[in-house]
Image (cartoon, rainbow, N blue to C red; front, side):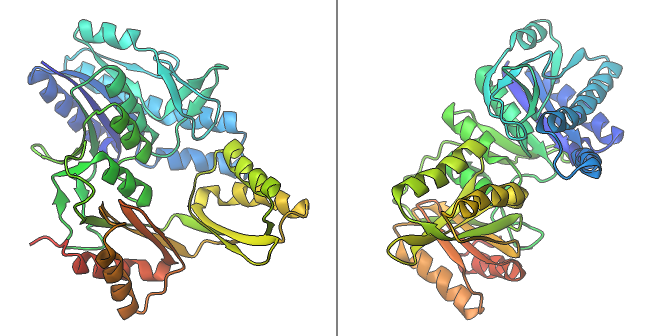
Length: 406
């Protein structure tokens, strides 16, 4: 007998009919002799509905009340799943963060887990009961509800699996694994049977929405295997995410991913003295804004331009924050661009094998696709381009690197 943590959310719990099917999957896992802890996120579309209600009242909802509102979506889904299991004569109980505290920091909308109180969960397992945990949410040390950011239920599940020392954390979604590219964009994309933690983290950061990158990072830290499975298939193998056994010296492209939920900010004429640069990075740290692909260019002996990408959802608060540098006379202007996409080639050994970057540039040049920014590492090469080019870029690069199925 092993302990399995299973996470369901979105379209997997999109209706009462689908919740019934998920209940059957959980029961099947129990019949196989396993203990099961279930993490559930909100029903499909519910989080967006709650956000729209808040935004109908104000463009900038109070962060504490915003998190208190969004946390209700998960509470509905967990209760419904518990009702479904109980109706099938399987003992189950739903819990939110007030019952099973996921202690977090005080950063509303993207809090990080500090500790988990698991006493009730362990008692349920000993009693043969199925605990169903509301994902995505936590409670700050001050006692306020917090949320973990979009996709945060994946992180809830990974954290629980780690602290409970589960055999595996299974992420059930509407796709049957991780693909070499989005099958909606590349019909020939193929499913990966296995992928390493590091490579999967890069996939997630590059725009693949199957698993939240924080969940993968946490699973990697505790060597907790993750498996991505389809909630709509009965005998799916899925994709296993675990420690990569191959070394980085072997260059291999695993897939191509893209995100159109990116924005670009350029701070023009930023003073290049140590004090101003320290202030710039301090602003990033205190606000918790995650940036990517940062580049800087000296425009004179005393000034520079800094350009970076970030999530579109962070654009407005970030622009307002960095305008403070302009108001103090430490920068000339703050420009933004939302008509971009970030395309990434994911693999191993990419940074040290020039032929991969050469092929990438050659293929895009042949398609007359201009590149605005570039970032490269051993695991990822990311490009910023106009979003109108991104679908074609994915298709031609997928073919050029021999990733197509068959």
